[in-house]
Image 1 (cartoon, rainbow, N blue to C red):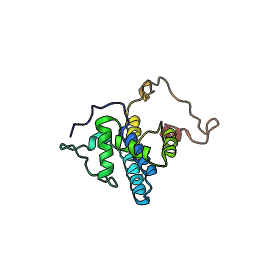
Image 2 (cartoon, one colour):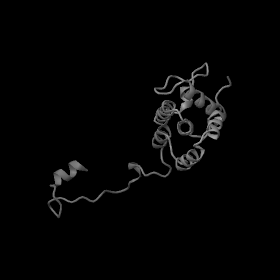
Image 3 (cartoon, rainbow, N blue to C red):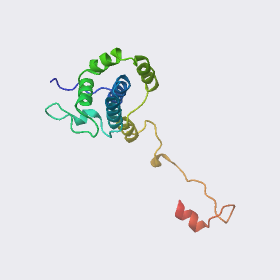
Image 4 (tube, rainbow, N blue to C red):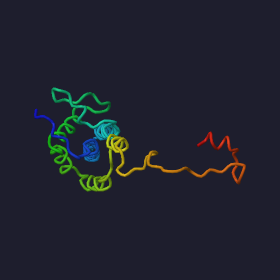
Length: 156
């Protein structure tokens, strides 16, 4: 088994979840379809990138609702950026048009892991408290506010 690809800007969790959704739509067997849909949701909602779930032997650390077939898709994506198994399954299914529509809808979705990563990163040009020079205007009962001066100072 080849090692995972080097880290890229690819939101692997979103890609894998999308491919698992594609399998869910392509499968005619209801149980299989629901299994892939649950696996897609589990991967999309992970708080860490899938790359961090790869164990030294190349398998994935256990993820709830992700079975061996879903793991295969995830490992394919980690190695190659896609999954020929999913593409072949979609091509052979009667629902290829539905899959194409689903792909178009979710094109710019971000996984939970990617959202958490973005929220944790400092925003370029963001204003911090230390950037303020001066004071902020407050009102008290002395002028036209509802708080006393002491309450205004306590809330500052």
